[in-house]
Length: 346
Image (cartoon, rainbow, N blue to C red):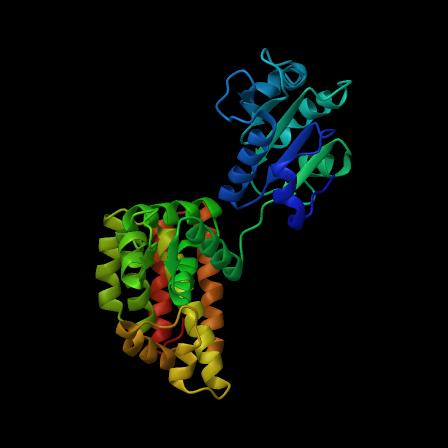
């Protein structure tokens, strides 16, 4: 049974009684975990109750596929339905899940957590097609969805944030629910959660709490690459990599800045003024960055920016799958970006 995204949170808060197993999968790890925990609490009330909650390692099921059915059929010593949590599920658990289907009744709810699964995945197909199984996809939030999530978390903690600050946080934090919630928790502690008047979240506070040194270093590398400053780029890359900043973090920082340039230049090419093009971005270009950003806009016509975004995407993919040295792949990509910013062939 496939659970529609609009129904997913309601289902996790109160899983159908006839469902034996729910598969929660996707690239948004924070959302996968949050929904899995909601299912556990809905069934067992307390996720730390050792009598009603148990966890299984998928590796055990390769040799003992019947172990999952045994746990699913076990009764709680203190009454109530049990929850069996299966983290890191892969295709190897399919035989174990099929053994659960032979049970005469669902004494426990099995909650299986998995990463991204393609439509051809046997695990996903099984859970989508069987009436007593459920599959819930957890996709990354859009920028608008991430902003709404930030607003909801802030509201629950009595934090007041201006729209531009929320937009900045959405861009900085990305789409992972767990990362977003963790950052808002950190902000709540900083501001003093529960103060009668509520906390006022300013841009300066958000940057101080959320913008860590690694990201700031990556942003500096991105700025230097897109400005065409090859000497500065060389020094900044050396400092960043020596300081432990991951190559993918640097590539994503460059892609993030380049995507904003692409949007601003497209607006400029469409007839908007430079000020309006920069002001229309969310979050808008901050005052201290306007001069540098305006100069970069002259270096990156929309066609060139689109090609460079493709280059950065391929470089990130190569860092993950090529087996080469990620530092070298990142360095080469950023040097090509700097050459393109200088008007040279890249």
